[in-house]
Length: 429
Image (tube, rainbow, N blue to C red; front, side, top):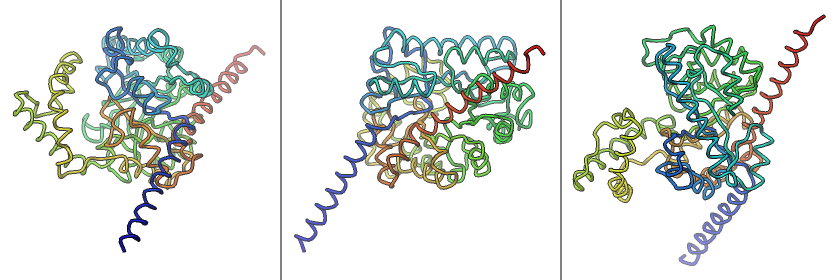
């Protein structure tokens, strides 16, 4: 009996080793592309940057160690007042983030990372061994009322843009209208938002559905002549969160030819499981902090309301507490949301709309990350879980980047056609 059990265990181990080895080869061959990584200009300075490993989930060493080939770095500005002053301040903040990404790729480390504007450039840069940077705009609020800013943002490298974030913009209702904001403002898109869809098609910028309301996303897909994306959303059929897409939206997305980039955001994957873990984790943080003589805020929302400098100071102060709690976390009774929960959503989406319409995103440095994929250096674990569940190399390649790059190519092809039509229509008879 002992011999039989030992042989069986040895066989299981050999099978596991073989699976890991196969997954590693696949991970090395495919282009891994994360469509949503938030940034702060504070981490793009000569003193603190993506070479000096700041307190972020993504930097160049982590991308290289984890085999994360490409990422959309995000020009995000939170929703503010719909006034000239608000638009001006938001535009300035957006330009600072554009400048930061260009500085990284053009001055800080051009030999290690380069900016891509097309799918072909993504492939060429990745094949050279460098990391690939792309730019996405989260919230069109900084464009104000001037639709010409769509082309200006595209010239600076923007390759996707959402028309709203948390709070209704001048272009679109936000999904937050389901739970606050006093309900919806426009019933979907504003007239300016409808015009923006046409202009984004013309310029060749992918339209991102991840934050606008359901009505807005359905109207966008009806209006758009090009495929669209949801840059960081998961399946509402598994987790009833307004940030996720329901089956009606998903089927419309499939008909549109678009792609949903499954997001590794704990509460969007399994809210109940995450809430139980978070309650226990936060209590442990406060307990250990008290033992170490370091105050840990009882309400985590206070941290997000701090200005960037104060937040950085606070996070640095509690770093020893976090390190100790991480050592003790295996004693917690509530399990964290993990890579398996994340791939559960991938499975659901693939079953519902097909593998050609699903992708991958982290929302790193914006609240994203799960156990097993909480930093860019753990990126391989996603590929491993996909291979463990039976996805082929061709399917893994589609999920990691192939589908998104296909949409980018189609959007840019539609833009060329639209510009040609405009030229013909405006030609003298």
